[in-house]
Structures are given as C-alpha cells and as structure tokens.
Length: 519
Image 1 (tube, rainbow, N blue to C red):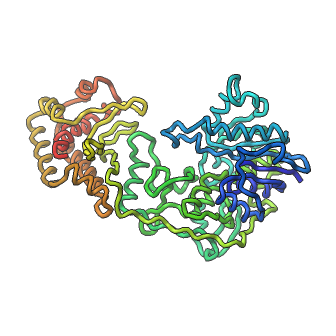
Image 2: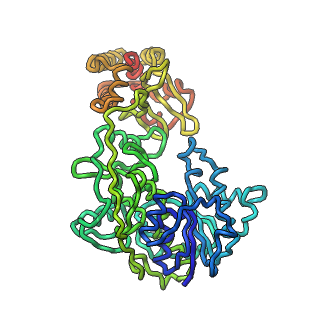
C-alpha cells in the first residue's frame, strides 16, 4: 500500500481522497482546532494541532518507511484578492509555501501536489525564477496548472491552482470520462424522504441527515441587496439571481454573509435562502455521511469553504498511482465507503436577522433602467460629510480601471434644458414635479434613517425603483429630438454604450439633476 502525508490538512479533503484510492494516510498536520477535530472524528485518528511553520523537519518528520506522496493546501487567505483591499499579504503567505516545499525536498516523495487559489500560479512562476524566494525549489515544481473542479465531477465551478510533480497529462485525461454535476442535482437529491448522495451514491432517510436545516428566508431587503449585487453590480460582471440550477454551483467561500455578492442564493417555497451546511458540504464534494464539528455555524461554513474537494484529490491520487483512463473508476464505485462518526455533532444556531444597522451604513446601488454595464450607470449612494451621511444621485462612466463621474446639478440641467424643445421640457418638468411631490419628506436624513432601520430598510430601493419608472415614463412622453453627439460633447469622449442608450442617459441627466435638489 502506498503511503502519504498531508500538510495543512484541513477537515480531510486530501485524506478522503487517499482513502478512496486505497492509500495509507500516515499523518496529517493542521493547526485549526475545529478543522483538525472534524478530520479526526471522521477518520478515527488522533492527530494533534500543529503549527506547521514551527515544524522541526528532521525531528518531527521521522517515519519508519518511505513516504510516497506529500500533499496539502497551505492557507490561501494571504493570497486572496478579498484580503487587504485586493493585495493580500503575499510575503506572509510565501512562508507556508516555503515550508511546504522544504518538507517535499526533505522527504523526497515519488509525487507531490499542492492546492491553492489561482493567483498563486503566477506568484509561484515568478518566485521560482532567479532572485525569487522559491528559486532553490524550481526543479521540484514541473507542474503549475489552474483547473476547474467542475471538470472533475465536483458540483461546483471552483478554479484552483494545482502545483507539484505528478502525471498531469494522465490527470487531465480523466476529464473525458467524468460527467459534470449541477447545483440542481445536489438540491434535488437532498429533497426527498430518502436522500441520495450526488457524489458517492450513498442513501439514507432524510430524518438521519444532519446539518440539513435551512436558515430563515432572506428578508425583502436582503433579497434585494443580493439581487442587485449579483445582477446589477456597478462594476463587476453579472451573476444569476437566484442561482442557475442547471450549472455547477459557484464557488463556496469560507466567509459570506446573508447579503454578500459571494453568497449562493436559491429559491425556497416562500422566498429565497442560502445553502444549508449539508448542501455546502455536498457541493464541495464531501459525502452526506461526513460530519462537520464546528463550534458555530460560521465555523462550519469556514471549514467547508476552505476545504479541498475530495473528488479532485481522488483523481490526483489516481494519477499518482498510474491508473490509466480505461481502468479508472469514479468515486462512487470506489471500494472505500465513508461511515458517519458516532461522536455527537454540535448543532449550530442560525444568525439573527439584525433589527438595526450601523448609523453610517453605506448604500451604493444603480438605478433600474439606467444601468448599462461595465461601470456605466446612474446610481444613488451616500457619503460621509461632516459626520453625516449625504445622499446623492450620480452618473459614472468609463471602465473599471478608469471610472469617471458627472455631477448631476443645476449647471447640467440648465445646459440640457436649452437644447430641448419647449414641449419636451414642459413634460419633463411636470412629471418630475409630480414625482417630487409624491416623495415629500425624502432627503438625506430620512433616507439614512430608513436604511439603518430594519422595518423601513427597503425604502431607498423603492425610491430608486420609482426613479427608474419615472425615466421610462419620460421616454414614452418625449420626442427628444437630440442625438448621441450631445453626450459626447458633455463627456468629451465617444462611448458606444452611451450612444446606444442616449435617450435614457439624457433624460437621466435632466431629471436626476432636479431630484438631487431635494436630497
């Protein structure tokens, strides 16, 4: 039997891949208590928490026989674009990768593999060159590749970097034999009285399935924030809301709130909800028998989101074992079957929906009917000025690397008013005046109060929805005998998106300039 160790082993994604492949797990090394405990309980091991940075390689890595494979997933947080404003802390993250490579160099396994976020691929390629911090290990790393886990049967589109020394061509050849799975497969298989494991084919009565409870539905405000952040984000590409069940799930992250762009939202019988702990585990490739021993709900979310999908590690080990495509079996046909541990599972409490929010809570959302993609949009937002949140309507254009703004004020209104026919100007002024009368009492102070109080938190969205409908109404009423050239004159540049939507852009300039006066 081949032997392996896993560094930064987490909750056992690498170990499960070993078990499925008939490989002995000699030892696992993990520092986080909840993850290590989950690993131990699921496999009946007794590994102690270890700070791998402090390992004494010659003293702590003494084994009675040769280690064939070294694998692991150094912490990815320091390399994440979500950390420290998109910069992360690469210098700190490289400490773990250096230590990992030191272990490989010392043990000299036949094959090894390291998993991390895609960004690390570029960092590794740079750092192994002359002058880089990892140059001494360059010959150890013939493989640096970014894969999509959904290509290997994980019901999740999760791009990961795999670096190491293993038969990469053989590993990639397996994709031709693997059937893709979807988020819909996961939800459907867990919905009946007799649930089915999407990845391993295990079955059990629904009453025995753990961590399957659903959180309360998203509130009206939470659903709207999720929808706008995904489908109408001011800058980033659009996502589906709710999730497209006919595709693999998006990446399950370690941290997400009920109102984050990263959260995976699906329909419930009464509204919208996040995925349960169990659904997240299956999407990440863990069996329905696998138990997560987190002390809190967020701890369970974190350990699942940080894990390496065991289905991917299974295929990596198959390549290390030299299994050719004709003899490859999928994980559900493997001889090893995971059994639920007998240790009681802590039941986690769901987060309470906040009754109130911070007094300085931010709002920044595009106006319906006035969002044109790639950062070109009209939006309502608040900004702190003299210890108060001041709300205003703005127009942005350009691109994500060079966003420009236009002030929507009386100067712009007067400039465009001179170019409109008297008939159009009269119609615009009349419906704008009616709109302002209908929204008496709306100003920066009232909008901020509504936005930080749960019961009225949807009000700013109602306001921008009404503005969007006002623009549609104005577009139907006005002849607007102007063309896109007038926009080019104001912005001093040519923009295809604006040229295609010049009518609503001009109306937005005029009407929102007037509405800004009441804010």
